[in-house]
Amino acid sequence: MTEAFGITDTGCIRSNNEDCYRIVPELGLYLLADGMGGAKAGERASELAVDSVAQVFRESDRRDSQVLLKAIETANRKVIDLAKNDLNLEGMGTTLVAALDLGEELLIASVGDSRAYLLENGAFRAITEDQSWVNEVGRPLGLDEAALRTHPIPTSSANLIVNCYTIRWKLGSMALLSSDGLHGVLRADVLESIVRADQALNVKCRRFIEAARSAGAPDNVTAVLLRRVQ
Image (cartoon, rainbow, N blue to C red; front, side):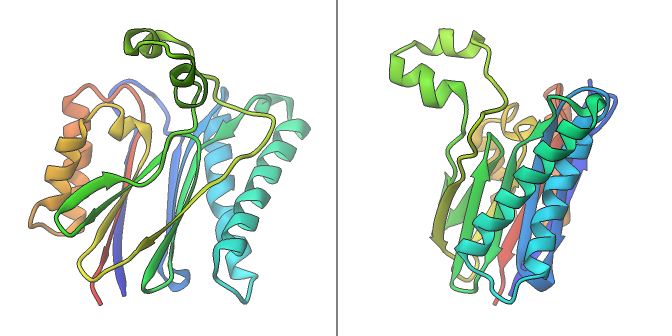
C-alpha cells in the first residue's frame, strides 16, 4: 500500500497557478503537470493532461506500462486538439510526470522537466532526466554551464517523447514528484533533508512550499510525496 499527499502553490510572483496534480489511490496513479501558455492556457493544458491520463486508466482493465504510455499519448493529443480549436489557447502545452504503483514496482513516465526523485536504502536520487534544450542539445554540443544557464529553452516539440523508468518499490521507500518551481529553486540536498524528516507527508509537503517561497518562488510550486507503507 502507498500513502500519498500533494500540494500546490502559486509562488511569490505569478498571479495564477498553471500547475496541476492528481492523486488517484484506487488506480495507484499519481500525476503532476506544469502548464504553459497565455490567457490561462497553461492551466487548461495541465488540468486536461492529468484528467485525461486518469480517464484512460479508469476505462482500461489493465494497469501496466503500455496503458501508461497510451494514456500520456491520449493526453498529448487532447491538449494539441484543444489548442488548434481555440485561438485563445494557441501555443499552450504542459509537462507531465506520472507514477503508477504496481506493488513491488513503481513505473515512472515523464515528458518535459517536471521530475521524480526516489529515497531508498539511505540514498536520494533523481529518477527522471529533464527533456530540455539544455540536456538534449546544449550539453552534447559542449556548451559550458554559464552559457546553458542563459540559453532560451524551447517548451514544446513536434514529436512526443515519453521517458519511462521502472524502479523497485520497497517498503519504506519514498518518491517525490515535483514541478520546476520546486526543484528549480531548492538544491537537491534541501529536497532530500525534507524528504528524510521524521514527519507526516502533509507536513513535509508544506515545508517544500515554505522553503520555495523563502527562496523567492518565481514560479508555481507543486509537490506530490509517496511512501510505500505495506
